[in-house]
Amino acid sequence: TYSQYRHYMQKEIFEQPCAIQNTIAGRLQSDFIDLSELGENINILFSKVQHVQIIACGTSYHSAMISRFWLEKLANLPCDIEIASEFRYRELVVRPGSLLITISQSGETADTLAALRLTKNYSGYLGSLTICNTEHSTLVRESDFALITYAGSEISVASTKTFTAQLTLMLILITYIARIRGMEHVIFHQIIRTIEKLPRSIEQILSLEKEIKILANKFIHKKHALFLGRGSLLPIAMEGALKLKETAYIHAEAYAAGELKHGPLALINDDIPVIVIVANDYLINKVKSNIEEVHARGGKLYIFAEQNTGFIQCKNINITLLPKTEPIIAPIIYAVPMQMLAYYIAVVKGNNVDQPRHLAKSVTVE
Ligand code: M6R
Image (cartoon, rainbow, N blue to C red):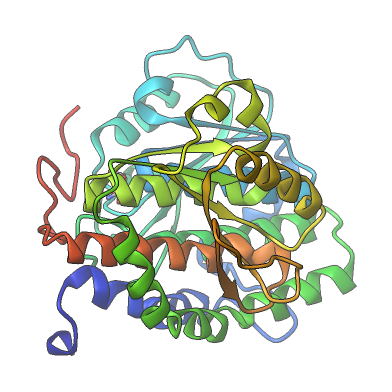
């Protein structure tokens, strides 16, 4: 019940295992994925796709970024992503066999809708599909196909459970498309097993609440923060920065860790916290050397990394240990500590967490 929680944002963060379970239910079977809700001709369409264009705004755009990573890795499909407010004002050059995907919590975001409508003037698209949390929305009505995230209604302006539900559904969809296009049986099954573990893994992460609450106190007087990530976790760094800006009113920027020495390294001092999100994947050693670059210049690091990955707590390095995670779902799971961090900083600062200043839940005007 809501009374257990101080804010909707907190409640919605804690609802994530359930939101994901509801999004998986019926779609993930023991040895296959059921997307029959898309109609009987969908496999023909998916086998024709040569390119995917994803359009979204804000947090939903971060889902698009991660989806591109999965589309390339699992389905070997080229993908372009763009924020709707830019896409709609560019000269469109449509690639042959392009599938348009929009991602939205509300299904009413003006720019995303305008982008969808714009593509209808071009014959090159194979069709449009929306990943949306609102079944009876304009986006769902106007798209050729829709997949609903069953995260339940999200009241807090800051998106949390709809983000991880979008990601889960995108991973299911991309795995399905990949299988049609020749993904090996064994890998297909491994991914199904991995997705099934998501609700439980997120429950484990939620138990870090106390630790993150304590960490939050170190941020209250900060004016700036830098988030670093690489690969599929760069969008999570961006999402962490967005959450911090909108709920805690701290200026935050996310950077690809490999870009540090191309400029932002000049900012490093002991007053700007540097938050690094590390996946235990092929990029871990690269991230470690980026961390070293910050450390050597006196930066204050807050590292979120898996156990047994060799990070050592010291004066300027704070480590939050995360449970062991399959790299493919790391972005979904690692989003949660970023949400919790922003939430608790906003709470300690006494901000209006659910209704941040100047913002609306649904951006229905341009
Ligand atoms: O309803 P949508 O997903 O289309 O909304 C897009 C953005 O306005 C939204 O994701 C926004 O960035 C979040 N509420 C931020 O937490």
